[in-house]
Length: 195
Image 1 (cartoon, one colour):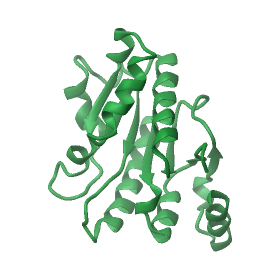
Image 2 (image 1 turned 30 degrees about the horizontal axis):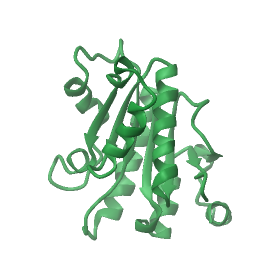
Image 3 (image 1 turned 45 degrees about the vertical axis):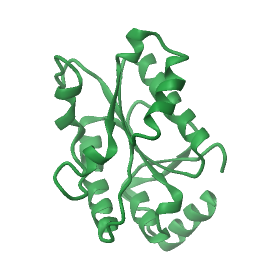
Image 4 (image 1 turned 90 degrees about the vertical axis):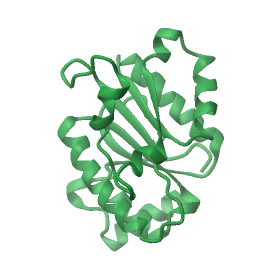
């Protein structure tokens, strides 16, 4: 399925030359970039989040995980089995609904708006941060256009601040048209282990 999507995008000219897409199967060697991840299965998804966090800890980075209340405990359980309390303190969780609907309608909030609330003594100069965001929405019909616009804004923030940021989408919830648009605002695509 993934290969078919990429082939279709290349044939349609929808992968922009200025923003080349690289397909990856893990995040271990990355320390900056805007990554899109369409997942199908929860177990490999959780493992990818855990790998993302551990890779960040190895680089002395905080991880901000923007996720829903159903999946956060599953990630926390996996991390608690592997990490010390000191390491766990470098992982901050934000409810994805609160993050994306903070202004009343779906919008990409800047992660920098949240960091001072999450990390005591935070300043851009002293903390290195990476983010993982599970992008979800309710039954709002016009949200697909907002998602595309938000990803475009997020791409600028990620590049300007040289961040590593993953945007994860449940593949069942994203139409092919929206998927194609989203890919153009990222420079990496995670190939799910189970795909």
